Amino acid sequence: MPRILGMDIPREKRIEAALPYIYGIGRYRSRMILEEAKVDPNKRAKDLSEAEIAKITSIIQSQYRIEGDLRREVTQNVRRHMDIGTYRGLRHRKGLPVRGQRTRTNARTRKGKKATVGAKIKTLPTA
Image (cartoon, rainbow, N blue to C red; front, side, top):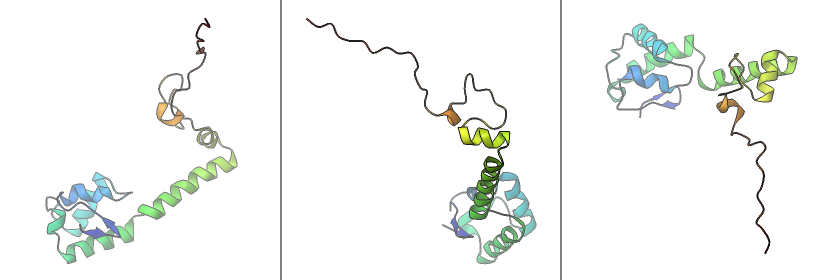
């Protein structure tokens, strides 16, 4: 597997589709990086030369925040909202949807497994 900035990217995929395996790089950003590096997006990751990998790596390092730095920044932003008590921070703290989605139905991803309310436990008749 070719390594870019300490991340293994899939060998068999086209480089345009392999770069988004790095956190912080999507399809559009992948295309922009390859265009700037003058690398054919249809080339397979395993077919890249060392010079092409170095060029892609230098572009990513100089222009974008990825992986650990980006995750740390996102975590700090969430924590900041929670500390200053904004509405968004309270939603994060309670584990509810943050961006205005409804919660009466849906929102199961944020709320977790459904808690059953009002279910009686049936007792067996004693004989």
